[in-house]
Image (cartoon, rainbow, N blue to C red; front, top):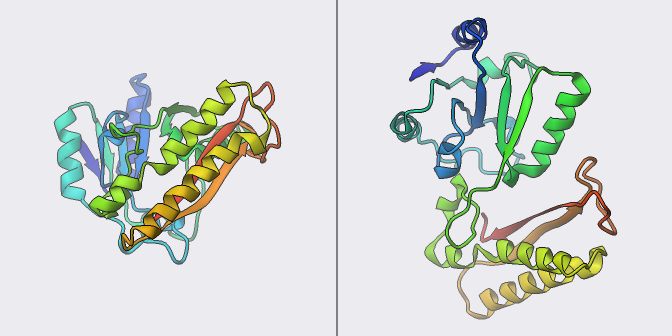
Length: 242
C-alpha cells in the first residue's frame, strides 16, 4: 500500500496507472475510518478538510486517528494508494479545481453533496464517474459516522430517532401518500415525542431537529408533493451537541 503526502508524486502515480489502462476509484475521507469507509476503498484520501466545517463546528475536536486508519486500510488488503495531504497543499492560495480521478465514490448519507457533485461533473464535463453507495448502518439503523464516538451510552440509545422517523415517512409513501404535510407529520411527531421523553427523564442532554427535507432528486428544491421522479428524503438531528 503506497502512501503519498504530496500532490506531485500522487499525480505521477495516477498517470502511470492511466498508461497501464487501470480504472482508479477514489474515496475521499476525513479519517477516523469505520466499516462504511472500508467497504468502498481502492484509492483513499485522509484529509480533515477545514472548508467542510462552519465557524462554530468541531474542526479542532474532529477525531484524528491516522495510525489506526492506516492499519485498517492495510488489513483489508484492497487499497493501492493513500493520499494524506497537508492543508497548505490543498489550499495554497484558496480553493481550486483539480480533478484527475476516474471514479469517485460517496454514500447516500451525504446525499446533497452527491447531487451537487453529480451536477458539477455533468455541467463542467469532467471525465469522472460518480458511484453512490447505500448508507452503511449499525444493526439498529444508526448511520455509521466518525462522530458517533461523541455519543454517551444514553445518547446512543436515542440516536436512532432520525432513522426511525425517516422510515415512518417511507412507510407513508408506500401507502400512496404523496403530499409533503402528510408524509412528514409522522416523522415530526416522533421526533417531538422523543425530545419530550429525554427532557422528562432528565437525561442531561437534548434531542433537537435540525431539518427534514423532501427534495427534488436533481435540483434539491423542496417539494410540496412527490411526483413521478420521486424525491430525496433526508434529515439531521442533534443529540446533545452531536
